[in-house]
Image 1 (cartoon, rainbow, N blue to C red):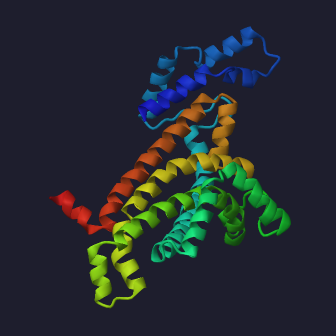
Image 2 (cartoon, rainbow, N blue to C red):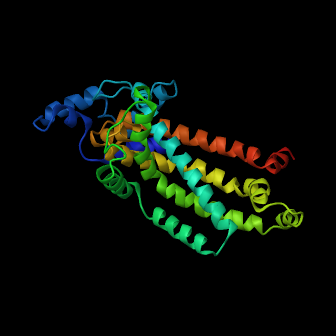
Image 3 (cartoon, one colour):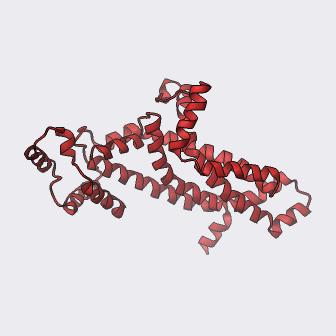
Length: 302
């Protein structure tokens, strides 16, 4: 966390321009820019700026934007529901489709179905959000009219309309995750299905579906749990692209806007918050190992 937030300060300080130039406009004189920079405290050495920000952040104060005069905490709280909904929906979509694909492929490895689904997965893996978004807009919104082209409907205004506004942005960032989850789970399932205890279960006359979900799926999903935790960090970057493409009032769009306007305080606070979320999610993923596979709890206890 310290390295990430320090890197943000250094990178923003190295970029051309300053927040004072954004506030005063292009016609501002150098003297006016220098005076405002001094007033805002951005004329100090980078390390001094960082230690001052850190001392406030450790007390729960992430600062106030010099552009909007809004506290970073308030800005995050206002926009977090949009980003959170997109992220959760994308993870759920990715997990459901990846599990279906992986189970089908592992049940009949090397079959035409396996090759077809693997090919589809390869296509998904090659389509980033900034390409998937316009393609989905063209086919699902412009041609078919199923979803709105852009904009956001709060969940309080109607769950159905809210879901219609969230599906396409979530799907655009879920495609890569579907491919990653599917490939990982397929490989682990095929390996588990070749174990001796699976052969013993089949010899006792258990059905294919029972063996798959009762005996093979749980020990094969440890790597998937790790991947889901790590995907949160990737989705944060992807939501920034999706929120910009679909004009959604989320954290990603605020981050892109703040970077462009050299709002170091807002960028620092958002990066710190995102880092804390990623650490927390990965900690929960570690705890989830014991839930998925009791053998992990026994090893930890030993």
